[in-house]
Image (cartoon, rainbow, N blue to C red):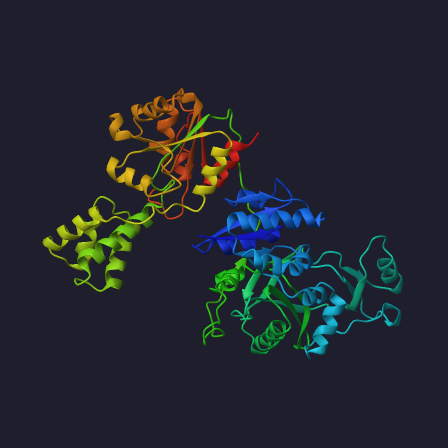
Length: 547
């Protein structure tokens, strides 16, 4: 896993970066923010509080320490506030082993000043709207004022008279304004792109901003207009040649006359730039890969309409904090389907490579796994491929002998276990499946091998039997009411634990897991005790550590 740092990622501007990085299976994003409690910590398994940016020395030292201690390979700024400092420190971070996704200091200085940006665009022959002096304007149409050093819709002003413009310019503490003729009807577009450390430009993602709120696009739609795409290519090339690096966002306006112009350039990730994911482009991933795009980079991609919305995350507040947490293993800590797929691939390499095309085998194997064929997995694969009994028996034996690599865990497992262990909670596993198989999974994971392990088959009965849960409690030397159970099965894990006297239980809703608890059906059951449905271990962590 490649550690990647998101700076000032605790607010809404960090969410898109986090979402994009979490789509990369080989990347482990770490969120750093000055606030201990913020939005993103409930979505990120890895979160670190750092000193405020106002103390540049302490802020810098904290980030560099994270880079060195955690082996961070790349640093992505989430807001405009830290851009100038990170631009100046690019070389120091590079010496520490991390590329900073930020443009050259001189270009950052230009793009954070809208007046300087306007001059920059004009100098490169790019179309812009000409600013006006309110004292020379006849106000047959209103003026629209934008702060020279603002972003989004923050601080914008509409003036309908010279007096209103003068009042806006004279606001105490107000940022200097640039004034433009107000457009009654227009269309807004955004260009999102990445420029890698070597100067390679990503596929360009052009979207129409259908509905905006608070300065960001709540609803976007893929744009295909040829003149806009040509203009997008021109400005992308200008930015790359001028020292543009990292992820950038360019705003276009198309007025009634149909002629597009550049209205703003943001040298950072746009709040709604995750639209790129819907088109099949991962902008942070492109920066990390740092390779020239293929010859079809500008070819049409899948079109999409994307919606950015607020979502409520409920963190259960427990009646009492337990002393230990007992976890189910498969589909709770271990990605069971991925584990099975890896073993099947190893079995194919060992005995079946000459019997079927690898793509045909992979299709049959993954279909059997994803459709839930656990007990009859080998039978189903062989039946799909039309194999004989001798082939079925050979594949079964190879599957059982497959050594496998490191046990695949969900991304939230290691950081959640570390945080709970650091808080003084004891951690254990209680699992139903064959003992030898489950021991192997634990031994093949550096994260899991030190957990206390209990096997229900050795206790005399599988979950939800009380003897299994009681065996874990005895092994930990604690009474059941000091324990919490975390699993993916409402009936076997959660209800079994609560009926065995455990203090609380969490039911995980893992994407792609074999068991998918049905909330509406669960609501028909009078649930005893403290049982909570959650989507991942990050919420379990926050709930168990809340005061």
